[in-house]
Length: 251
Image 1 (cartoon, one colour):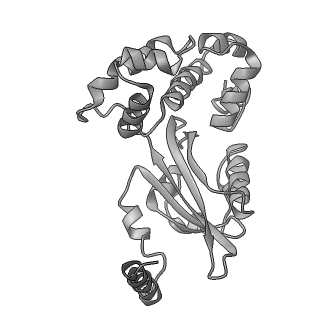
Image 2 (cartoon, rainbow, N blue to C red; image 1 turned 90 degrees about the horizontal axis):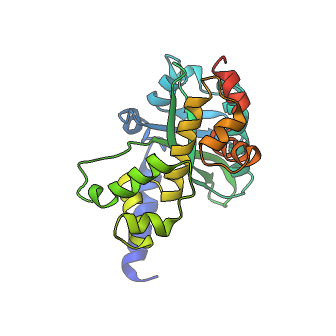
Image 3 (cartoon, rainbow, N blue to C red; image 1 turned 30 degrees about the vertical axis):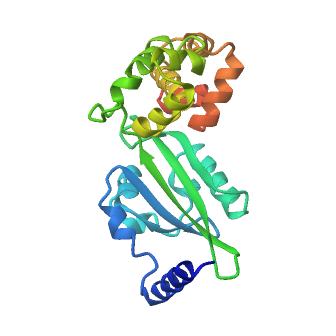
């Protein structure tokens, strides 16, 4: 490590020791209405939360969340799935990075977010808790100058999500390489092309599940070759099976 890095490491350590409240970022996250922020202890219980999470849970005060696990806060089976994620991170299984998830908000409207969770370690390296954020997806930012370069590919996904959509074909539609397509998708949508395809298909599926069509019919209409493939993808992303989701909607 060179001299500059050593000096910065020392400055970082000194600053860390001098901060009275290690959770100084809490009021900063309170100011972000599209970002959920939380810190949990080794048992997966909320220690720090921001106002956005409180609102998403349909609660009024942070105290209503503190000391509780996800399984005690969210409806089944969402809460159990979130707790299982926490337990995996706390057990040292690694971080959760940009997990695309569908949430049901208190008004029962679905909303998409990208979730990240990382372990918190003490000075000896032992895991003592975790911190996480879930960021709402702000789709189709047309103010971005590069939007038009991928608009054609996005239109293809929206119009043909019921069909196979190989990346080379999407790239040709956008007149760019696959690498360029992926880079622009991440810049504009904070999603890979594959993630956007999944999101578009499951958006359509979640809407159809509010109606009378069978799960098998919905699977075919949303581009899945068979019922089981659709159910696996839906459960992996949404956290429940299509049938369970339909029941949660009261259908």
